[in-house]
Image 1 (cartoon, helix red, strand yellow):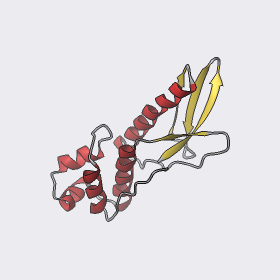
Image 2 (spheres, helix red, strand yellow):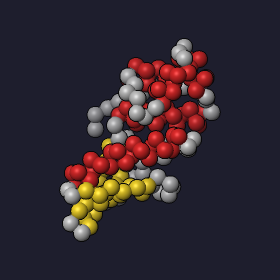
Image 3 (cartoon, one colour):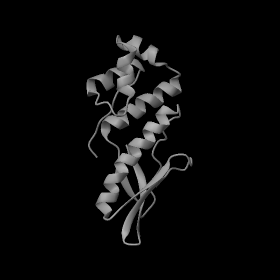
Length: 140
């Protein structure tokens, strides 16, 4: 998953901002170089996704990139976790339902959904399968 960003040079530093059309998924990072500002944006996106999940809101899908903007890619594990979380919300499945379908303890589902926990692809695939879905990984 990738989110569009706007990159601007302001007073000798670079500002990278994210602004989703829904108005609630936005933020900005500033650094001395373009590359450093983009690197900071990865942490910003992770924090925004974590906040969305903690507040029980759907994690917004990335919007289209307009000409002149750049992209910031999410870490693949975070993208999978956000997708699984969104599917749970849409299908109205509880963590207990997923745990039962996976044959695991609910604490394992908590870890799978925790953006800071390093889940394995097997665990994420199992969680997706419990929702009737599968992970689709590809090089871009």
